[in-house]
Picture (spheres, rainbow, N blue to C red):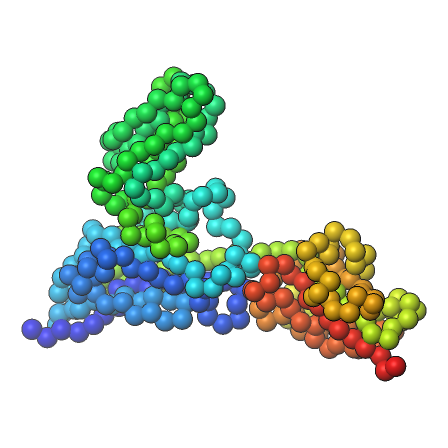
Length: 337
């Protein structure tokens, strides 16, 4: 029988901060997913910022082995510790990781759901103050697996997950037979201990074999005021008063103009900026802060110019990189003595 390889799906990222491919997250296939792909004659190929899956097809283009109805799960693990510096949180709940699925439509990812990635013995901290509070562990089909009752003075319930299959579960809180809170769990023995930031669970539909899906996970860039600490050498007070920042590249780059105000360099805007970063403490520092929050971006802003009395001192001011938790830059200028 003649065989060939055809595309099945791909999962990639879109992050406006980066000028090139986004490579801050890497795909981690757990052993069960790797085995499922082997049995289904599916091969994975990693590219910068994207994972591609192809399947082995017969001469008619049909899969040699179909995985229709099965789910492939991947962990998303940070390869760059600075990822959070430029990325808005994807889920609001602390302690949860985003889970991306394609439940609504086979060829598109749903909005992420925040889940608790866990295994072993799971401790649930009750969110409701009502007592007595019934706390139930249920599987994806709604079957109640374990129940605990919290009396006055108790705020936690523990559930032994070691005998359960990996998958989706919920912990629900009930008071007087009414559900008052719910916590989604993803039980996974392997991924829960591998520093995973998020999860992707793709259900393979028959349609994907004929119409491959290109899934995209979008991110939002952090917005914050841009700050420039200008460290001056051989500058008198009159010279300092003539300094300013002018954005002359906004029209060329089709973006909103950034305006800057001069603020005290020893005020709250300088919190966390140590003297060692600024250099010689005898040199005056002028701090400029943008009037509005600005989306951070890797490539910076063209023709963002530092000027003194009409003269351009710096033609393109630098932009804070992803390695910087806050959007500030330190610029050194000097006049001949």
